[in-house]
Length: 214
Image (cartoon, rainbow, N blue to C red; front, side, top):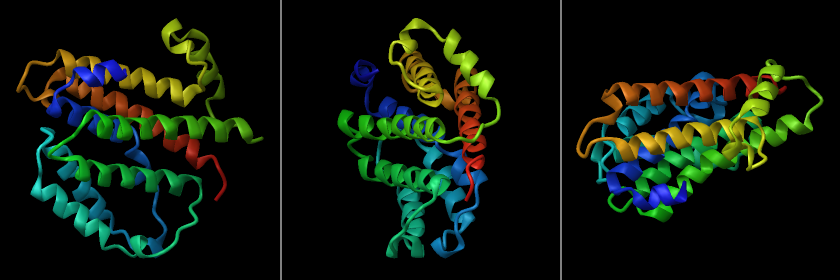
């Protein structure tokens, strides 16, 4: 997958990080943030809409303005000791800020760093699930998935979410590299399938996070 990133141009790398953060999006939308963070849901919605509007890797004033509005929340002026779901929200927000910092360059290193964030969060959730005595719903389905996953993904010896994230990431990278130059991937049937795949994965992540006590 690193080799795939190396083959991408700036716009394609921007698409790759967008899909990576899409896989972390549901915790931002479906789980309420602590009130003392002072984060307006409308500001988060604006950030996500602006973040999806242009995926060419170039500077984007509207997106940077959305980041600036978010950054004025009290969250950024205080120390935070997040619970599990909140840590996923913070990492997703940090990922979007990293995108804003990368625009105009969107180097391989910057791209890889943001994509690795999605991988690390998936692996972290697997570790939390392995260490808890709780039974998280649909455990049998996850075990069945790991038992039947292809040998290429099984070779990593990862848990369910880390493996699923790599599976979806691989599909995204392949579609990005196969898309016609200058085409709007998100508006195509292939793009919509990728968005659905990222959203389904992200929804599964939220279901697991909600199983942990607050």
